Image 1: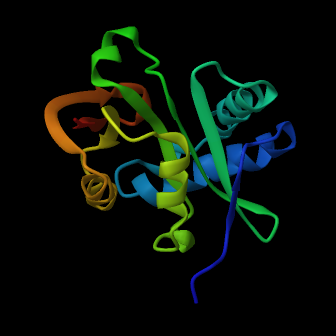
Image 2 (image 1 turned 180 degrees about the vertical axis):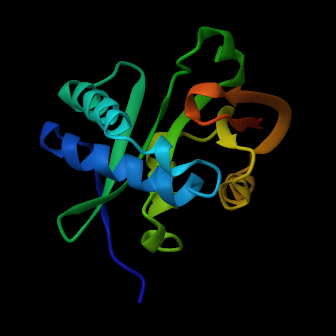
Length: 165
């Protein structure tokens, strides 16, 4: 049975749950790429601070939405104007999209994606070794453009840029 969900903007009271979910989704998506000592209390604390800031007030030019099921936040996405002005020529930016593994295939990922990223020119960065995510983005019109970056502060994971024209 496909789980049901609703979408809504995040609230300040969601910050703790979002921080925990963020780290859980990292573990589910990148656990095969990151050592266990990556998942520290300090990383969780940084996510707490991030989500406290993101839920405190709307971010100009950005949209954040959460997927909720049975009163529990199960996914989130953010998009809008590029965070880096040098990337403005690529259009809108999908800055994050994470969904609990048990909600993959439920339609929640697509709904989150559609809620934060309008049609048209856009870009995103995705882990190079994340074929499931890359397939999802290809279905939404994105293609790898050859740009890559190694995230030294994120366990050395290589990310690749995908663009939609």
